[in-house]
Image 1 (cartoon, rainbow, N blue to C red):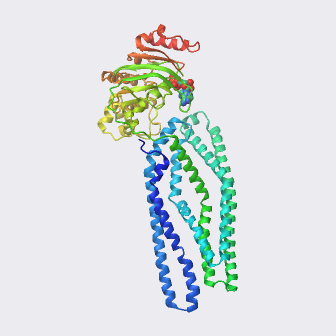
Image 2: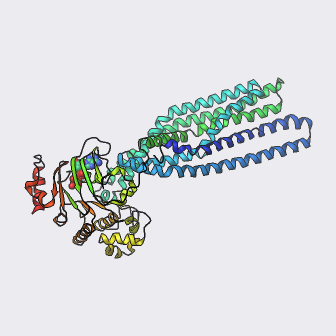
Image 3: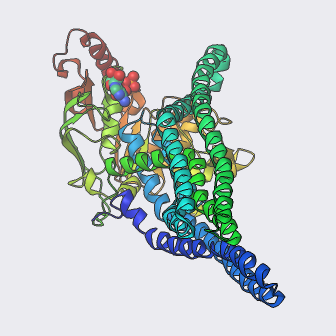
Length: 575
Ligand SMILES: Nc1ncnc2c1ncn2[C@@H]1O[C@H](COP(=O)(O)OP(=O)(O)OP(=O)(O)O)[C@@H](O)[C@H]1O
């Protein structure tokens, strides 16, 4: 059962409000007749009869109708504002989950722009864009009234509407591709700038600013050039359509005056017809003016629709009992997201609660890739990973995160306080946070900071040292006391104190029957492992009790290139 199947399903909840807006637009457009009718009556009745009473009565009726018109406009805008909020309520959470899943499955797909797309679509649907669209069906009604005044008037107004509409279509054809290209170029430039700015220190230290600025400038200029081309083309057409409208005003009055002279129409009808044609052309004109937003909203809709189709919603899982920590893999084959070329193949092992497994192997052997599959961020292309006998996919994703603690090779912290980072931004008590940091042996270090647990850290915790960050990330992994801990090079940035704290944490985890898997070549840590798995060239070369596996003779024959590296590594750790 899917919580939210597709984007279109989610949009359906917006239908009732959309229906209300259409109804309001219908009432508002009906009240548009007040102006022309008033003119007609004043010219043809009041001026003819010279009756002030009629003028007052007509004016009172017209003003009353216009008050209703004003109130309806006001209610329509309030309804649209609330619709925007409801749209956001329905869409925001499923969209965010899909953006995360999409970024995992296709890291280069710039999925984060979906969050901008949703704003663009909402602004169109709940702003003047939708109002213009709702007014368009009234164009034929206003034109029919023009024909009712006189066929000549009707034809002039229809010709005007057709010319303005053709200009709108031309606008679409001449600017659509360029605007889309400009949009993509702008996204690419923004993505480049975002990723570049994450590495400002390297940029400054290595003197890369000029070359990177040149690259960004080129991308930025391309966007501007495309936007300028589109705006130039659109500008010609928008000016042409304004010119056509002015000419039409003259043409309609000219036709009306001619018909009055010919006694086929009253002067009141001439003025009313001119206003009526203005009403008929206004929505067409607005749509021409809104074209750019419309194209933007339509591309946003298409991209969101594609995202919601490509990334299915989270399937609701049965709540499985908290795991004891049995962890196993069978014939695991792993490829990076979006690829079918295996990086790691043939990994099978089983661990009982309380056992520690060391993953060893030369650089590029596939250890981090294996770890990504073990924590469920990469889906295996064959085989499976089981926690307490159930495939990882069968566990609720959020719950799995609390049962399996993870320390990635690249230490990333999020903007917030140390306490929030350790608590994984969940609601947590101070006791839970302190317990996790005590278990990670980092409580004293945090307390020694001027703001302690409330220390604000930037995106990558810049004011903390590499070792401090790594120890906080270990506390984050230990938060909630997960049954399984998977640590990718947990000692990479640690000093002696940090390593001692890590060894104590691992001993404590084992003593409390937690299952631990870690990547490391440090003898101090390997000594704590019960089992070892040697990975080389993406293949499992050996698995078993650490003492047996890390004897040189236990390593299966390796391809010529990697044999010396792994053998040397195995010799080192075994000595
Ligand atoms: N996202 C990815 N897309 C494509 N190839 C990848 C991806 N991540 C890793 N690889 C490739 O997979 C291989 C194994 O990389 P991995 O990072 O798993 O090795 P490792 O054993 O952890 O190395 P190290 O000890 O240096 O961290 C490498 O050849 C790497 O280029």
